[in-house]
Amino acid sequence: MSTVRILFKRNVKLFFKDKGMFFTALITPMILLVLYSTFLGNVYRDSFKASLPEGMEISEQIIEGGVGGQLVSSILAVSCVTVAFCSNMLMVQDKATGARKDLTVSPVKPSRLALSYYLATLASTLIICCAAAVVCLIYLGVVGWYLSAFDVLMIFWDILLMVLFGTALSSVIGFFLSSQGQIAAVGSIVSSCYGFVCGAYMPISQFSQGLQRALSFFPGIYGTSLLRNHAMGGAFAAMEEEGVPDELIDGLRDVMDCNLYFFDKPVSMGTMYAILITTVAVLIGAYIVLNKTKRTNG
Image (cartoon, rainbow, N blue to C red; front, side):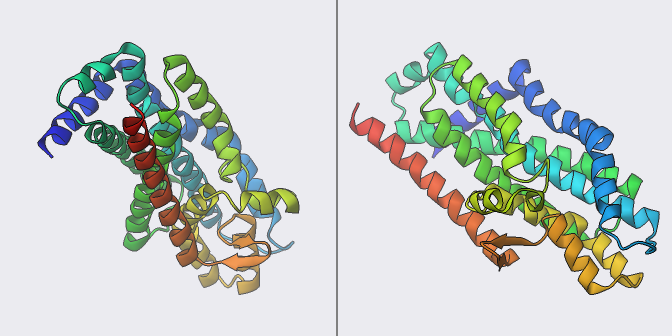
């Protein structure tokens, strides 16, 4: 595995040395935080308050904590995938520049080269997303902190799973790309569309029933929901302590996509984890098969 380790270090160093790739990946979560807090914050806040019965008053800090949790979960859900596509540009860039041919001419097995790309993308994306998570947690500390130590731990666990998903997805798609223009185009499409299909920009509950059922087949929405549950769970618990009825809290959880449904059947958090982990395994398996097939076909 020494070859994989050497290639892994090479890929990570090249990523962080390439100011274009690095700053594109790094700035994405920061831009999202500014945009979300500036524009979507008011939308989330109004939606949150509109879901409360007339005359019911809840501490403003709890509302801010709940809205902040929704913003943070949206940012992290999108970043874990979009940053992975930015980090994986190196794999396509090596094809475009011919560096990949130079590497395969040397005694480097294609399978080890493919593994090094995956691990390097995973590591680079994790570093950036964990840094973004720290900034988001600081933001929550300012607007309203209701997270327990367990919630924080689970947020980072969710980030790991989502980064695994984003890295596997970008690796499979990147396998078919061979120019910087192609990866830039794909990255732009993913950045603009992924937030909608995963329920980060707008909760899935706000879509039509047909679209909700179609999107329930997309594993990304379950990752977003897991982050929602852990980022907003403390605020919901604080509401319960203030005497808010359980029925109302459950309704808010439906509106915010903390509760998800597959054709009107509730999906438990355990099932969400199972879906996400299975999807990661399938995508990694597809990436392995693609690389083996290419090697066999020359």
